[in-house]
Amino acid sequence: MELPVISNAAPEEASGGGCSSSGCGTAPDALSHLPDHIRAKVQDHPCYSEEAHHYFARMHVAVAPACNIQCNYCNRKYDCSNESRPGVVSELLTPDQAIKKVLAVAAEIPQMTVLGIAGPGDPLANPARTFETFEQLSEKAPDIKLCVSTNGLSLPQYVDEIAKHNIDHVTITINCVDPEVGAKIYPWIYWNNKRIFGIEGAKILIEQQQKGLEMLTSRGILVKVNSVLIPGVNDEHLKEVSKIVKAKGAFLHNVMPLIAEPEHGTYYGIMEQPEPTPEQLQDLQDACAGDMAMMRHCRQCRADAVGLLGEDRGDEFTMDKIDVMDVDYEAAMVRRKEVHDSIIEKLEAQRGHTKPKPQGIPEGSRPVLMAVAGKNGLVAEHFGHAKEFLIYEASPDGVRFISHRKTELYCGGMDSCGEGDEEPDSLLDRNIKVLEGCEVVLCSKIGFEPWGKLEAAGIAPNGEHAMEPIEEAVMAVYKEIAATGRLLPSTDSLKVA
Ligand code: CLF
Ligand code: SF4
Image (tube, rainbow, N blue to C red; front, side, top):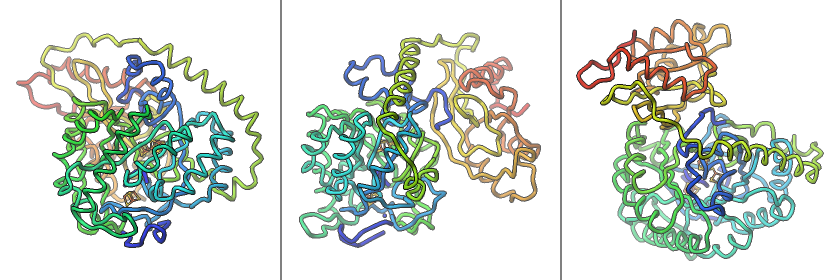
């Protein structure tokens, strides 16, 4: 799977087990420096282009149940329909079912431009199912980009097959380049019909990943590298990984936080391996950013995700619903092209528009982190309805997207917005903890109780910029704080007004 299962079964046995931001990372003009042929490949890919993920959707089909390695953060047997993390699926599909599903989704969601196979196991440990799906799709839906995500163990042997099917986006999950580090992440690999444990197994995996990366980039296939940040295991080491994969031609590096909850039944979850804090993740992404383009908008998708990143429409496309849909794909392609052309035209118009440096911020002002309950690029969510907060940093250089942080929903309805007594305080407290490090939270509306608790936690709630574009609202608040003189080094940190 795209990344982040406990199973000691051999591969053949192991089985089943929109974005709301406005200007994340690859800013509107961040693609302008790219050669035309590369830009054409990424401009409508929601993972390879941060800009594209606001407009274009992706979907995954879960046709690949088996895996050929074991990662300590993975348990494919755990499934919860509310869970969004790699390896989680509700329905395992045959290639034929997958094709039906893709055509139905593509007709219904014309913005869906990319079909990825990312699990729930490793697509290349299920080559027959994976390549049959790709082959049928390139014939029946030539307007859909194909994407695959792999742990890399079998990659070198399938590079020609990947190229043959016009799969021009490949993600390799590379968590280390040192077998000693690898042995702490991968207890075993399945290689040449036997299980190989520890350092020896990790060494083979690393060699295969690096070889596969070089073979793909030499063929002009765009490679994104995903890495799972595991504090105390590979945190420092990932900087080295970033340098090496960049040197070998990877297009983008996506450092994702370890998910390790005990209820998932993973080794790390059971052993209570700490997950990184948002600050640790950001620090590492920033440290690696000097060396290569970093992806910061990843949502750690399920292996059957459907829709824009950050939204999941999988429930609308279960096989029982698809079986009764009547899809005219020829007609759908015409409509899809119109939709794509109009989005790309809009993006082209935006491209090259460089934002002026903000005025009126005193020299030496410190940056401020703000959390935004956003929707479609606007400050448009109620505090209590936000499924995630978008974290922005405002500084004298402007506003930049940093990350998203997931919340647990607690609001009982539009009217109560966090004031209902049906929800436990502890949930609100946990959500406020998610916002640690932020000084302001922008939302369209907020209840009295969360307002008070945010203030008590030193986070200023702000509902005054409802329905404004996010970056403009963040900068407006930053300027308001700057005007009070509280951003200069000698002054106290921001106090809630
Ligand atoms: Fe899927 Fe992965 Fe292709 Fe994207 S996801 S196979 S590259 S189409 Fe994207 Fe999801 Fe992050 Fe993956 S947000 S988990 S990076
Ligand atoms: Fe799970 Fe295999 Fe993916 Fe590792 S490579 S996360 S074990 S499916």
